[in-house]
Amino acid sequence: MIGILGGTFDPVHFGHLRTALDVCEVLALDEVRLVPCHLPPHRGRPVASSRLRAGMLEAAVAAYPAFVVDQRELGREGPSYSFDTLTSLRVELGAMPICLLIGMDAFRGLTTWHRWRELIDLCHLVVMTRPGAEIPAQGELADFIRLHRVAAADELRQLSAGRLLFQPVTRLEISATDIRKRLAEGRSADFLIPEAVSRIINSEGLYQGKQ
Ligand code: ATP
Image (tube, rainbow, N blue to C red):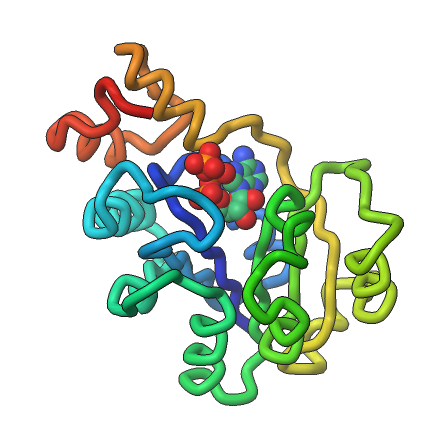
């Protein structure tokens, strides 16, 4: 069973990496694919180029064979829709269970995603929550949760797709927005991002004077 974590990764930080490792361990995933998006559909253009964001990810996970950077979105024109990415992963991986890892903040906006109802036909959804996080109780998303939710991670292995799990992960109040802001103000992002990522940011002069 493999996990997919998509994101802007502008830049990748320990909030992404530690939570992905938590899920990798709890679900005993064979691999986590980190998928940097080229053109995010729901926000403005990233600050760093796609090539540099992918390069920072590669540097961050170089010592972790279970974490693999998957650059398939960078080769596609137009907005980077998760639906298209999962369709192509499904072709590549056959019937293997695929878990799409998403943070609770991103999950709350799921109903705005391109072809969102069909995503669950292509993969399981693993929503990374904080202990005690509030799960949407009303509306379309609540109905979707009722339909697909399972209580335990081992239920994901029995099917290639179709199930939804809420998985508590380490709470880390780190965001790329905050990191870009610190760097733009000439402050340090040490201990929020891997050293190898800091080195690339410094050598490329990234995030200086921008947010
Ligand atoms: P930005 O601040 O630029 O919006 P971000 O730090 O939220 O960026 P993204 O690349 O947009 O990072 O996030 C990719 C995925 O990682 C999303 O599913 C998001 O919910 C999740 N994520 C980001 N930061 C954390 C964190 N600190 N803890 C848990 N999940 C996170």
